[in-house]
Image (cartoon, rainbow, N blue to C red; front, side, top):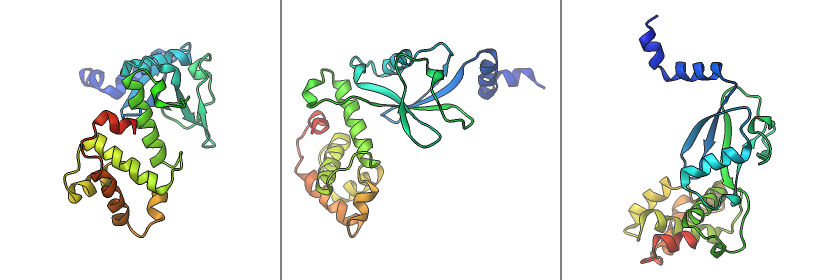
Length: 209
């Protein structure tokens, strides 16, 4: 075997590291669609892992957030902050441990949050939860929220054609809402009506709304 080639192989290096330590590979799904890959050591506590993940956002108000996983029964569970990460009852499926960085504790009013990064993460969490059906919202409010998501991501309305193309890329319209209406075009038309009314609204205002 050509040793020079095997040493530069990322999979070989990862396997080597795992064999040399008692660590476990962990993938953390972030709210901005990034994924972190970490080697979790046996003594690492959950709050230490949360600190590490939070540092990727320079997040100061990390007390509102947590790390969650799905067990073999599909139940969502939170890491207990005072326990070691690897002591939790993770899925027995082979491969890396999968965790999700999510909002765990909510506030009554968005003005209670002090940092803009926290506000943006709350926004991304809400957008994802609505799209995936975790939070159910009345149809008209879904259309209003989709319009604000467009304003946040794309700025002012330019044309129906551009808006329809953007809506197909942005995760804003839950499957349940689409099934309740005659067509996708009908839903898009409703979003466009609200989107046009947001002309001049800043990205920050759209996020808060």
